[in-house]
Amino acid sequence: MEGEIKQFDSDRQQGTLEDEEGRIRSFPASELRGGLEPVPGRQIAFEPVDDDKASHLWLSRYAVQGTEKVYSKTMALLLAFLGGGLGAHKFYLGAWGWGILYALLLPTGVSVVVAFAEGIRYIIMDEERFRAKTAAARGAFTFIW
Image (cartoon, rainbow, N blue to C red):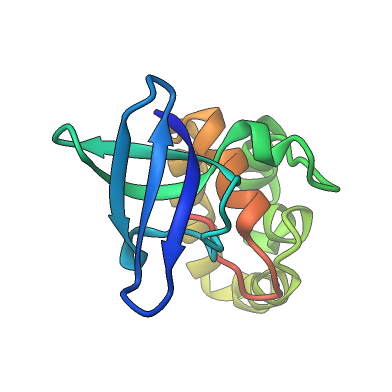
């Protein structure tokens, strides 16, 4: 479900959002995903809990469209399956630290197995969640799961 953060009390670590149907829902800071900052007016996606609570908040597809780089789920999937042992998908997604580690672990076969599992995860993950996770991901050792 989509919505907009209305307010956030940093002392209480609680906030409210308005969903796409106009209902006000509360959420604790512990439900913010991917380094999401609880800024009023920010468009978010979330999972509804009961009629008045929200969980698993992440950037919505509308917020992601304004970012500098939008990664292709299909490309990440192909790179995970075809070059995952070398960390190709990690380099593509900006996690160059993991990319180097995967390449170093290639002789052991560990990186091939992990990359295959990530490829399966990319297949299962819907496009909106993939874009939200990649938009929120920053740094050499970001792991998108």
